[in-house]
Image (cartoon, rainbow, N blue to C red; front, side, top):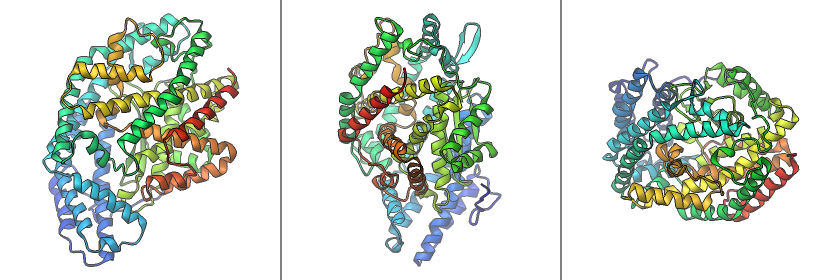
Length: 569
Protein backbone atom coordinates (compact mmCIF):
# COMPACT_ATOMS: atom_id res chain seq x y z
CA UNK A 1 0.00 0.00 0.00
CA UNK A 2 1.82 3.09 -1.23
CA UNK A 3 -0.88 5.76 -0.89
CA UNK A 4 0.40 9.00 0.62
CA UNK A 5 -1.52 12.02 1.83
CA UNK A 6 0.48 15.18 1.12
CA UNK A 7 -0.04 18.30 3.19
CA UNK A 8 -1.85 21.17 1.52
CA UNK A 9 -2.44 23.52 4.44
CA UNK A 10 0.16 22.66 7.07
CA UNK A 11 3.80 23.56 6.20
CA UNK A 12 5.97 20.51 5.60
CA UNK A 13 8.66 21.74 7.99
CA UNK A 14 6.28 22.50 10.87
CA UNK A 15 7.72 21.68 14.32
CA UNK A 16 4.74 20.52 16.38
CA UNK A 17 6.81 20.77 19.56
CA UNK A 18 6.97 24.56 19.02
CA UNK A 19 3.60 26.08 19.84
CA UNK A 20 4.59 29.42 18.27
CA UNK A 21 4.52 27.62 14.92
CA UNK A 22 1.17 25.94 15.63
CA UNK A 23 -0.87 28.89 16.88
CA UNK A 24 -0.85 30.89 13.60
CA UNK A 25 -2.38 27.92 11.79
CA UNK A 26 -5.21 27.64 14.32
CA UNK A 27 -5.69 31.40 14.22
CA UNK A 28 -5.97 31.31 10.43
CA UNK A 29 -8.76 28.75 10.65
CA UNK A 30 -10.54 30.60 13.46
CA UNK A 31 -10.43 33.92 11.57
CA UNK A 32 -11.07 32.65 8.04
CA UNK A 33 -14.34 33.97 6.58
CA UNK A 34 -16.70 31.24 5.34
CA UNK A 35 -19.26 32.41 2.81
CA UNK A 36 -20.42 29.23 1.10
CA UNK A 37 -20.84 25.50 1.57
CA UNK A 38 -17.74 24.92 -0.59
CA UNK A 39 -15.68 27.19 1.62
CA UNK A 40 -16.94 25.40 4.73
CA UNK A 41 -15.95 22.04 3.26
CA UNK A 42 -12.46 23.35 2.44
CA UNK A 43 -12.18 24.81 5.94
CA UNK A 44 -13.07 21.40 7.41
CA UNK A 45 -10.46 19.73 5.21
CA UNK A 46 -7.77 22.13 6.43
CA UNK A 47 -8.83 21.71 10.07
CA UNK A 48 -8.70 17.94 9.60
CA UNK A 49 -5.19 18.11 8.15
CA UNK A 50 -3.92 20.23 11.04
CA UNK A 51 -5.57 17.95 13.61
CA UNK A 52 -4.04 14.89 11.91
CA UNK A 53 -0.55 16.34 12.09
CA UNK A 54 -0.87 17.28 15.76
CA UNK A 55 -2.60 14.03 16.75
CA UNK A 56 0.05 11.91 15.07
CA UNK A 57 2.82 13.82 16.82
CA UNK A 58 1.12 13.20 20.18
CA UNK A 59 0.54 9.54 19.32
CA UNK A 60 4.19 9.02 18.45
CA UNK A 61 5.30 10.58 21.72
CA UNK A 62 2.87 8.26 23.57
CA UNK A 63 4.17 5.21 21.66
CA UNK A 64 7.76 6.14 22.49
CA UNK A 65 6.83 6.56 26.15
CA UNK A 66 5.06 3.17 26.18
CA UNK A 67 8.04 1.40 24.65
CA UNK A 68 10.68 3.07 26.85
CA UNK A 69 9.26 4.02 30.25
CA UNK A 70 12.78 4.36 31.71
CA UNK A 71 14.14 6.83 29.13
CA UNK A 72 14.13 10.32 30.69
CA UNK A 73 14.40 12.19 27.37
CA UNK A 74 11.46 10.31 25.87
CA UNK A 75 9.41 11.02 28.99
CA UNK A 76 10.45 14.68 28.80
CA UNK A 77 9.34 14.93 25.16
CA UNK A 78 6.02 13.28 25.96
CA UNK A 79 5.36 15.48 28.99
CA UNK A 80 6.33 18.57 26.98
CA UNK A 81 3.50 17.76 24.58
CA UNK A 82 1.11 16.95 27.43
CA UNK A 83 1.94 20.03 29.51
CA UNK A 84 2.90 22.71 26.98
CA UNK A 85 1.28 21.89 23.64
CA UNK A 86 -1.95 19.95 24.14
CA UNK A 87 -3.42 22.27 26.82
CA UNK A 88 -2.94 25.27 24.53
CA UNK A 89 -4.52 23.51 21.57
CA UNK A 90 -7.71 22.50 23.40
CA UNK A 91 -9.26 26.00 23.62
CA UNK A 92 -8.29 26.70 20.02
CA UNK A 93 -9.92 23.49 18.82
CA UNK A 94 -13.00 24.38 20.86
CA UNK A 95 -13.20 27.61 18.85
CA UNK A 96 -13.01 25.59 15.63
CA UNK A 97 -15.86 23.39 16.80
CA UNK A 98 -17.94 26.43 17.70
CA UNK A 99 -17.19 27.99 14.33
CA UNK A 100 -18.61 24.95 12.53
CA UNK A 101 -21.70 24.71 14.73
CA UNK A 102 -22.40 28.46 14.43
CA UNK A 103 -21.98 28.54 10.66
CA UNK A 104 -25.19 29.18 8.69
CA UNK A 105 -23.88 26.71 6.11
CA UNK A 106 -23.54 23.68 8.41
CA UNK A 107 -27.14 22.62 7.82
CA UNK A 108 -26.54 22.78 4.06
CA UNK A 109 -23.67 20.31 4.08
CA UNK A 110 -24.86 17.31 2.11
CA UNK A 111 -24.76 13.82 3.60
CA UNK A 112 -25.45 11.97 6.82
CA UNK A 113 -21.75 11.97 7.73
CA UNK A 114 -21.93 15.70 8.46
CA UNK A 115 -24.90 15.18 10.76
CA UNK A 116 -22.80 12.62 12.67
CA UNK A 117 -19.96 15.13 12.97
CA UNK A 118 -22.30 17.90 14.06
CA UNK A 119 -23.77 15.72 16.83
CA UNK A 120 -20.32 14.70 18.09
CA UNK A 121 -18.97 18.24 18.13
CA UNK A 122 -22.07 19.62 19.82
CA UNK A 123 -21.49 17.22 22.72
CA UNK A 124 -17.87 18.36 22.95
CA UNK A 125 -18.82 22.02 22.92
CA UNK A 126 -21.44 21.55 25.62
CA UNK A 127 -18.84 19.84 27.86
CA UNK A 128 -15.86 22.08 27.21
CA UNK A 129 -14.64 24.38 29.98
CA UNK A 130 -11.25 26.02 29.74
CA UNK A 131 -10.85 25.66 33.50
CA UNK A 132 -10.71 21.88 32.98
CA UNK A 133 -7.61 21.93 30.79
CA UNK A 134 -5.03 22.08 33.62
CA UNK A 135 -7.06 19.45 35.51
CA UNK A 136 -6.95 17.12 32.51
CA UNK A 137 -3.19 17.65 32.31
CA UNK A 138 -2.86 16.65 35.97
CA UNK A 139 -4.89 13.50 35.24
CA UNK A 140 -2.56 12.53 32.37
CA UNK A 141 0.49 13.06 34.59
CA UNK A 142 -0.96 10.77 37.26
CA UNK A 143 -1.85 8.12 34.68
CA UNK A 144 1.72 8.34 33.34
CA UNK A 145 2.97 7.73 36.88
CA UNK A 146 0.76 4.61 37.06
CA UNK A 147 2.37 3.40 33.81
CA UNK A 148 5.85 3.98 35.24
CA UNK A 149 5.00 2.04 38.40
CA UNK A 150 3.59 -0.82 36.32
CA UNK A 151 6.48 -0.79 33.83
CA UNK A 152 9.00 -1.07 36.67
CA UNK A 153 7.43 -4.25 38.09
CA UNK A 154 10.23 -6.79 37.61
CA UNK A 155 10.72 -9.99 39.62
CA UNK A 156 13.45 -12.52 40.28
CA UNK A 157 12.20 -16.06 39.74
CA UNK A 158 14.43 -19.11 39.99
CA UNK A 159 17.57 -17.12 39.32
CA UNK A 160 16.34 -14.97 36.41
CA UNK A 161 14.70 -11.57 36.06
CA UNK A 162 11.27 -11.37 34.38
CA UNK A 163 8.54 -8.89 33.60
CA UNK A 164 5.18 -9.91 35.03
CA UNK A 165 4.04 -10.71 31.49
CA UNK A 166 6.99 -13.07 31.01
CA UNK A 167 6.39 -14.64 34.42
CA UNK A 168 2.86 -15.57 33.34
CA UNK A 169 4.36 -18.47 31.35
CA UNK A 170 5.10 -20.30 34.60
CA UNK A 171 1.51 -19.97 35.85
CA UNK A 172 0.57 -22.34 33.00
CA UNK A 173 2.98 -25.08 34.10
CA UNK A 174 1.57 -28.54 35.02
CA UNK A 175 3.81 -28.62 38.12
CA UNK A 176 1.47 -27.10 40.69
CA UNK A 177 4.31 -25.99 42.96
CA UNK A 178 5.95 -24.06 40.12
CA UNK A 179 2.79 -22.25 39.14
CA UNK A 180 1.89 -21.46 42.78
CA UNK A 181 5.35 -20.02 43.32
CA UNK A 182 5.10 -17.99 40.11
CA UNK A 183 1.63 -16.71 40.99
CA UNK A 184 2.72 -15.73 44.49
CA UNK A 185 5.78 -13.97 43.10
CA UNK A 186 3.66 -11.97 40.63
CA UNK A 187 0.89 -11.14 43.09
CA UNK A 188 3.40 -10.27 45.79
CA UNK A 189 5.19 -7.87 43.48
CA UNK A 190 1.94 -6.10 42.68
CA UNK A 191 1.17 -5.93 46.39
CA UNK A 192 4.41 -4.02 47.02
CA UNK A 193 2.97 -1.04 45.13
CA UNK A 194 -0.59 -1.34 46.40
CA UNK A 195 -0.25 1.69 48.67
CA UNK A 196 1.34 3.88 45.99
CA UNK A 197 -1.38 2.98 43.48
CA UNK A 198 -4.14 3.58 46.03
CA UNK A 199 -2.70 7.02 46.75
CA UNK A 200 -2.49 7.76 43.04
CA UNK A 201 -6.10 6.67 42.50
CA UNK A 202 -7.21 8.81 45.44
CA UNK A 203 -5.71 11.81 43.63
CA UNK A 204 -7.39 10.94 40.33
CA UNK A 205 -10.95 10.67 41.64
CA UNK A 206 -11.45 14.24 42.94
CA UNK A 207 -9.80 15.66 39.82
CA UNK A 208 -12.30 13.82 37.62
CA UNK A 209 -15.21 14.85 39.84
CA UNK A 210 -14.07 18.47 39.62
CA UNK A 211 -13.89 18.21 35.81
CA UNK A 212 -17.47 16.90 35.78
CA UNK A 213 -18.73 19.60 38.15
CA UNK A 214 -17.09 22.33 36.09
CA UNK A 215 -18.99 21.02 33.06
CA UNK A 216 -22.31 21.16 34.95
CA UNK A 217 -22.51 17.37 35.30
CA UNK A 218 -23.73 15.84 38.55
CA UNK A 219 -20.98 13.18 38.53
CA UNK A 220 -18.14 11.87 36.40
CA UNK A 221 -20.27 9.04 35.03
CA UNK A 222 -22.61 11.57 33.39
CA UNK A 223 -19.58 13.45 32.09
CA UNK A 224 -17.97 10.31 30.65
CA UNK A 225 -21.21 9.26 28.97
CA UNK A 226 -21.35 12.50 27.03
CA UNK A 227 -17.61 12.66 26.38
CA UNK A 228 -17.71 9.15 24.91
CA UNK A 229 -20.69 10.15 22.70
CA UNK A 230 -22.85 7.34 24.06
CA UNK A 231 -26.00 8.37 22.26
CA UNK A 232 -27.48 4.88 21.91
CA UNK A 233 -27.57 3.44 25.44
CA UNK A 234 -27.69 4.52 29.08
CA UNK A 235 -25.98 3.62 32.37
CA UNK A 236 -29.08 1.67 33.35
CA UNK A 237 -28.71 -0.41 30.17
CA UNK A 238 -25.21 -1.34 31.36
CA UNK A 239 -26.42 -2.33 34.80
CA UNK A 240 -29.13 -4.48 33.21
CA UNK A 241 -26.43 -6.07 31.05
CA UNK A 242 -24.58 -6.94 34.25
CA UNK A 243 -27.75 -8.52 35.65
CA UNK A 244 -28.07 -10.63 32.50
CA UNK A 245 -24.43 -11.72 32.81
CA UNK A 246 -25.00 -12.75 36.41
CA UNK A 247 -27.88 -14.98 35.30
CA UNK A 248 -26.51 -16.31 32.02
CA UNK A 249 -22.72 -16.47 32.44
CA UNK A 250 -21.80 -16.89 36.10
CA UNK A 251 -23.47 -20.34 36.37
CA UNK A 252 -21.60 -21.47 33.25
CA UNK A 253 -18.29 -20.32 34.76
CA UNK A 254 -19.13 -22.26 37.92
CA UNK A 255 -19.81 -25.30 35.76
CA UNK A 256 -16.47 -24.87 33.94
CA UNK A 257 -14.64 -24.54 37.25
CA UNK A 258 -16.27 -27.67 38.69
CA UNK A 259 -15.14 -29.60 35.62
CA UNK A 260 -11.66 -28.07 35.87
CA UNK A 261 -11.34 -29.18 39.49
CA UNK A 262 -12.42 -32.71 38.53
CA UNK A 263 -9.95 -32.81 35.65
CA UNK A 264 -7.11 -31.57 37.86
CA UNK A 265 -8.16 -33.95 40.66
CA UNK A 266 -8.47 -31.10 43.14
CA UNK A 267 -11.03 -30.57 45.88
CA UNK A 268 -10.98 -26.83 45.27
CA UNK A 269 -9.34 -24.48 42.79
CA UNK A 270 -6.80 -21.91 43.88
CA UNK A 271 -5.90 -18.76 41.91
CA UNK A 272 -2.88 -20.50 40.33
CA UNK A 273 -5.04 -23.33 38.96
CA UNK A 274 -6.96 -21.24 36.41
CA UNK A 275 -4.43 -20.96 33.55
CA UNK A 276 -2.97 -24.48 33.52
CA UNK A 277 -4.30 -27.02 31.04
CA UNK A 278 -7.08 -28.93 32.89
CA UNK A 279 -5.64 -32.26 31.73
CA UNK A 280 -2.23 -31.20 33.09
CA UNK A 281 -0.69 -31.31 29.64
CA UNK A 282 2.32 -29.05 28.94
CA UNK A 283 1.30 -25.44 28.31
CA UNK A 284 0.64 -24.27 24.79
CA UNK A 285 3.70 -22.54 23.43
CA UNK A 286 2.87 -21.12 19.98
CA UNK A 287 6.35 -19.63 19.55
CA UNK A 288 9.53 -19.03 21.52
CA UNK A 289 9.52 -15.62 23.22
CA UNK A 290 12.59 -14.59 21.19
CA UNK A 291 11.07 -15.61 17.82
CA UNK A 292 8.85 -12.63 17.15
CA UNK A 293 9.40 -12.75 13.37
CA UNK A 294 8.09 -16.32 13.24
CA UNK A 295 5.13 -15.26 15.38
CA UNK A 296 4.28 -12.40 13.01
CA UNK A 297 4.62 -14.57 9.91
CA UNK A 298 2.25 -17.22 11.26
CA UNK A 299 -0.37 -14.64 12.24
CA UNK A 300 -0.09 -13.28 8.71
CA UNK A 301 -0.83 -16.80 7.42
CA UNK A 302 -4.06 -16.81 9.43
CA UNK A 303 -5.05 -13.45 7.96
CA UNK A 304 -4.27 -14.72 4.47
CA UNK A 305 -6.57 -17.70 4.95
CA UNK A 306 -9.38 -15.36 6.00
CA UNK A 307 -8.73 -12.90 3.18
CA UNK A 308 -5.58 -12.17 1.14
CA UNK A 309 -6.43 -8.48 1.43
CA UNK A 310 -6.17 -8.72 5.21
CA UNK A 311 -2.72 -10.26 4.88
CA UNK A 312 -1.67 -7.43 2.55
CA UNK A 313 -2.95 -4.91 5.06
CA UNK A 314 -1.00 -6.61 7.85
CA UNK A 315 2.16 -6.35 5.77
CA UNK A 316 1.79 -2.56 5.86
CA UNK A 317 2.65 -2.63 9.55
CA UNK A 318 5.79 -4.70 8.97
CA UNK A 319 6.93 -2.58 6.05
CA UNK A 320 6.47 0.63 8.05
CA UNK A 321 8.08 -0.74 11.25
CA UNK A 322 4.78 -0.21 13.03
CA UNK A 323 5.08 -3.23 15.33
CA UNK A 324 6.61 -3.39 18.82
CA UNK A 325 5.57 -6.76 20.17
CA UNK A 326 8.09 -8.33 22.54
CA UNK A 327 7.92 -7.94 26.33
CA UNK A 328 11.00 -6.40 27.93
CA UNK A 329 12.13 -4.46 30.96
CA UNK A 330 11.03 -0.83 31.01
CA UNK A 331 8.11 -1.39 28.66
CA UNK A 332 4.58 -0.40 29.65
CA UNK A 333 2.34 -3.45 30.25
CA UNK A 334 -0.63 -4.28 28.03
CA UNK A 335 -1.31 -3.94 24.35
CA UNK A 336 -2.99 -1.48 22.02
CA UNK A 337 -3.36 -0.31 18.44
CA UNK A 338 -2.70 3.38 17.87
CA UNK A 339 -3.75 5.19 14.71
CA UNK A 340 -1.15 7.52 13.20
CA UNK A 341 -3.58 10.02 11.78
CA UNK A 342 -1.47 11.91 9.25
CA UNK A 343 0.09 8.82 7.69
CA UNK A 344 -3.27 7.03 8.15
CA UNK A 345 -1.40 3.97 9.37
CA UNK A 346 -1.84 1.74 12.44
CA UNK A 347 0.79 0.93 15.05
CA UNK A 348 0.54 -2.17 17.26
CA UNK A 349 2.09 -2.34 20.73
CA UNK A 350 2.00 -5.46 22.92
CA UNK A 351 4.05 -7.58 25.32
CA UNK A 352 4.50 -10.98 23.69
CA UNK A 353 6.09 -13.65 25.87
CA UNK A 354 5.40 -16.84 23.91
CA UNK A 355 1.91 -17.45 25.28
CA UNK A 356 -1.27 -18.53 23.49
CA UNK A 357 -2.83 -15.28 24.68
CA UNK A 358 -0.23 -13.44 22.58
CA UNK A 359 -1.71 -15.01 19.42
CA UNK A 360 -5.17 -13.81 20.42
CA UNK A 361 -3.82 -10.35 21.27
CA UNK A 362 -2.14 -9.88 17.89
CA UNK A 363 -5.29 -11.07 16.11
CA UNK A 364 -7.25 -8.58 18.25
CA UNK A 365 -4.97 -5.62 17.58
CA UNK A 366 -4.77 -6.68 13.95
CA UNK A 367 -8.54 -6.20 13.73
CA UNK A 368 -8.11 -2.63 14.98
CA UNK A 369 -5.36 -2.11 12.41
CA UNK A 370 -7.63 -3.34 9.61
CA UNK A 371 -10.26 -0.87 10.80
CA UNK A 372 -7.75 1.98 10.61
CA UNK A 373 -6.68 1.03 7.09
CA UNK A 374 -10.22 0.35 5.85
CA UNK A 375 -11.41 3.82 6.87
CA UNK A 376 -8.29 5.72 5.79
CA UNK A 377 -9.94 7.17 2.66
CA UNK A 378 -12.46 9.13 4.75
CA UNK A 379 -11.18 12.71 4.17
CA UNK A 380 -11.97 14.03 7.65
CA UNK A 381 -9.98 12.64 10.55
CA UNK A 382 -12.94 13.50 12.77
CA UNK A 383 -15.03 10.82 11.01
CA UNK A 384 -12.48 8.04 10.52
CA UNK A 385 -12.94 6.49 13.95
CA UNK A 386 -16.10 4.56 14.75
CA UNK A 387 -17.63 4.48 18.25
CA UNK A 388 -15.49 2.27 20.48
CA UNK A 389 -18.28 -0.28 20.84
CA UNK A 390 -17.90 -1.04 17.13
CA UNK A 391 -14.12 -0.63 17.06
CA UNK A 392 -13.98 -3.57 19.45
CA UNK A 393 -16.23 -5.61 17.15
CA UNK A 394 -13.49 -5.21 14.55
CA UNK A 395 -10.88 -6.63 16.92
CA UNK A 396 -12.87 -9.28 18.77
CA UNK A 397 -14.30 -10.68 15.56
CA UNK A 398 -10.78 -11.18 14.28
CA UNK A 399 -9.91 -13.22 17.39
CA UNK A 400 -12.87 -15.53 16.81
CA UNK A 401 -12.44 -15.79 13.04
CA UNK A 402 -8.72 -16.41 13.46
CA UNK A 403 -9.30 -19.13 16.06
CA UNK A 404 -10.57 -21.40 13.30
CA UNK A 405 -6.96 -21.44 11.99
CA UNK A 406 -4.92 -22.12 15.12
CA UNK A 407 -3.51 -25.15 13.27
CA UNK A 408 -1.02 -22.64 11.84
CA UNK A 409 0.64 -22.78 15.25
CA UNK A 410 -0.28 -26.28 16.47
CA UNK A 411 -1.10 -29.83 15.55
CA UNK A 412 -4.84 -30.64 15.62
CA UNK A 413 -5.00 -31.68 19.28
CA UNK A 414 -3.33 -28.53 20.52
CA UNK A 415 -5.25 -26.34 18.05
CA UNK A 416 -8.45 -27.66 19.63
CA UNK A 417 -7.02 -26.98 23.08
CA UNK A 418 -6.31 -23.39 22.04
CA UNK A 419 -9.83 -22.96 20.66
CA UNK A 420 -11.37 -24.38 23.83
CA UNK A 421 -9.22 -22.13 25.98
CA UNK A 422 -10.23 -19.07 24.00
CA UNK A 423 -13.96 -19.85 24.02
CA UNK A 424 -13.89 -20.57 27.74
CA UNK A 425 -11.99 -17.30 28.14
CA UNK A 426 -14.82 -15.44 26.41
CA UNK A 427 -17.37 -16.93 28.80
CA UNK A 428 -15.15 -16.02 31.77
CA UNK A 429 -14.59 -12.54 30.40
CA UNK A 430 -18.23 -11.47 30.67
CA UNK A 431 -18.38 -11.69 34.50
CA UNK A 432 -15.02 -9.90 34.79
CA UNK A 433 -16.24 -7.16 32.46
CA UNK A 434 -19.40 -6.81 34.54
CA UNK A 435 -17.27 -6.64 37.69
CA UNK A 436 -15.07 -3.82 36.37
CA UNK A 437 -17.98 -1.89 34.85
CA UNK A 438 -20.23 -2.20 37.91
CA UNK A 439 -17.31 -1.15 40.13
CA UNK A 440 -16.83 1.99 38.06
CA UNK A 441 -20.50 2.89 38.32
CA UNK A 442 -20.18 2.74 42.12
CA UNK A 443 -16.85 4.60 42.27
CA UNK A 444 -18.02 7.61 40.29
CA UNK A 445 -21.48 7.89 41.81
CA UNK A 446 -20.03 7.83 45.35
CA UNK A 447 -17.54 10.71 45.43
CA UNK A 448 -15.58 11.14 48.65
CA UNK A 449 -15.62 7.44 49.57
CA UNK A 450 -12.80 6.05 51.70
CA UNK A 451 -10.27 3.39 50.67
CA UNK A 452 -12.00 0.95 53.05
CA UNK A 453 -15.43 1.65 51.53
CA UNK A 454 -13.97 1.17 48.05
CA UNK A 455 -12.38 -2.14 49.03
CA UNK A 456 -15.58 -3.40 50.64
CA UNK A 457 -17.60 -2.49 47.56
CA UNK A 458 -15.02 -4.11 45.28
CA UNK A 459 -15.26 -7.35 47.23
CA UNK A 460 -19.07 -7.27 47.21
CA UNK A 461 -19.14 -6.85 43.44
CA UNK A 462 -16.37 -9.39 42.93
CA UNK A 463 -18.27 -11.95 45.00
CA UNK A 464 -21.40 -11.34 42.94
CA UNK A 465 -19.68 -12.20 39.64
CA UNK A 466 -16.83 -14.49 40.71
CA UNK A 467 -16.57 -18.25 40.62
CA UNK A 468 -15.86 -20.25 43.77
CA UNK A 469 -12.06 -20.16 43.65
CA UNK A 470 -10.43 -20.40 47.08
CA UNK A 471 -8.40 -17.26 47.90
CA UNK A 472 -7.87 -18.03 51.59
CA UNK A 473 -4.52 -16.72 52.79
CA UNK A 474 -4.33 -14.25 49.90
CA UNK A 475 -7.08 -11.82 50.86
CA UNK A 476 -4.93 -8.70 50.43
CA UNK A 477 -4.12 -9.72 46.85
CA UNK A 478 -7.78 -10.24 46.07
CA UNK A 479 -8.70 -6.89 47.62
CA UNK A 480 -6.30 -5.06 45.29
CA UNK A 481 -6.98 -7.14 42.18
CA UNK A 482 -8.69 -4.18 40.50
CA UNK A 483 -5.42 -2.23 40.38
CA UNK A 484 -4.12 -4.32 37.49
CA UNK A 485 -6.99 -3.15 35.22
CA UNK A 486 -5.39 -0.17 33.51
CA UNK A 487 -8.72 1.04 32.07
CA UNK A 488 -9.68 2.18 35.57
CA UNK A 489 -6.77 4.59 35.43
CA UNK A 490 -6.48 5.46 31.75
CA UNK A 491 -10.10 5.63 30.62
CA UNK A 492 -12.86 5.34 33.23
CA UNK A 493 -16.00 3.62 31.91
CA UNK A 494 -14.13 2.38 28.84
CA UNK A 495 -14.68 -1.33 29.46
CA UNK A 496 -18.34 -1.97 28.79
CA UNK A 497 -17.44 -1.57 25.10
CA UNK A 498 -15.67 -4.92 25.21
CA UNK A 499 -18.80 -6.65 26.47
CA UNK A 500 -21.10 -5.03 23.92
CA UNK A 501 -18.61 -5.73 21.14
CA UNK A 502 -18.08 -9.33 22.20
CA UNK A 503 -21.76 -10.00 21.58
CA UNK A 504 -21.40 -8.46 18.13
CA UNK A 505 -18.26 -10.48 17.41
CA UNK A 506 -19.95 -13.72 18.48
CA UNK A 507 -22.84 -12.98 16.13
CA UNK A 508 -20.44 -12.39 13.23
CA UNK A 509 -18.47 -15.55 14.06
CA UNK A 510 -21.65 -17.66 14.02
CA UNK A 511 -22.61 -16.15 10.66
CA UNK A 512 -19.12 -16.96 9.33
CA UNK A 513 -19.75 -20.63 10.00
CA UNK A 514 -22.77 -20.43 7.70
CA UNK A 515 -21.16 -18.29 4.97
CA UNK A 516 -17.53 -17.27 5.62
CA UNK A 517 -17.11 -15.14 2.49
CA UNK A 518 -20.21 -13.12 3.15
CA UNK A 519 -19.26 -12.63 6.81
CA UNK A 520 -15.80 -11.28 5.87
CA UNK A 521 -17.34 -9.12 3.14
CA UNK A 522 -19.84 -7.60 5.61
CA UNK A 523 -17.06 -7.15 8.15
CA UNK A 524 -14.84 -5.22 5.74
CA UNK A 525 -17.74 -3.16 4.38
CA UNK A 526 -18.66 -2.06 7.90
CA UNK A 527 -15.05 -1.17 8.72
CA UNK A 528 -14.84 1.08 5.65
CA UNK A 529 -17.64 3.23 7.06
CA UNK A 530 -15.35 4.49 9.83
CA UNK A 531 -17.35 6.87 12.00
CA UNK A 532 -19.80 8.05 9.36
CA UNK A 533 -22.78 6.05 10.67
CA UNK A 534 -24.51 5.61 14.00
CA UNK A 535 -23.63 2.68 16.23
CA UNK A 536 -26.75 0.61 15.38
CA UNK A 537 -26.16 1.30 11.67
CA UNK A 538 -22.55 0.07 11.87
CA UNK A 539 -23.67 -3.16 13.52
CA UNK A 540 -26.34 -3.59 10.84
CA UNK A 541 -23.76 -3.02 8.08
CA UNK A 542 -21.78 -5.95 9.52
CA UNK A 543 -24.92 -8.09 9.41
CA UNK A 544 -25.32 -8.18 13.20
CA UNK A 545 -27.63 -6.65 15.80
CA UNK A 546 -26.80 -3.88 18.27
CA UNK A 547 -28.33 -5.30 21.41
CA UNK A 548 -26.88 -6.41 24.73
CA UNK A 549 -29.98 -7.57 26.52
CA UNK A 550 -30.81 -11.11 27.60
CA UNK A 551 -32.46 -11.87 24.27
CA UNK A 552 -29.03 -11.62 22.60
CA UNK A 553 -26.81 -12.90 25.42
CA UNK A 554 -28.65 -16.14 26.21
CA UNK A 555 -28.65 -17.64 22.67
CA UNK A 556 -24.99 -16.75 22.24
CA UNK A 557 -24.10 -18.46 25.51
CA UNK A 558 -25.94 -21.54 24.30
CA UNK A 559 -23.96 -21.40 21.04
CA UNK A 560 -20.69 -21.20 22.98
CA UNK A 561 -21.64 -24.16 25.15
CA UNK A 562 -22.59 -26.17 22.07
CA UNK A 563 -19.27 -25.32 20.43
CA UNK A 564 -17.38 -26.39 23.54
CA UNK A 565 -19.35 -29.62 23.70
CA UNK A 566 -18.35 -30.39 20.10
CA UNK A 567 -14.64 -29.85 20.74
CA UNK A 568 -12.67 -32.88 21.97
CA UNK A 569 -11.46 -32.53 25.55
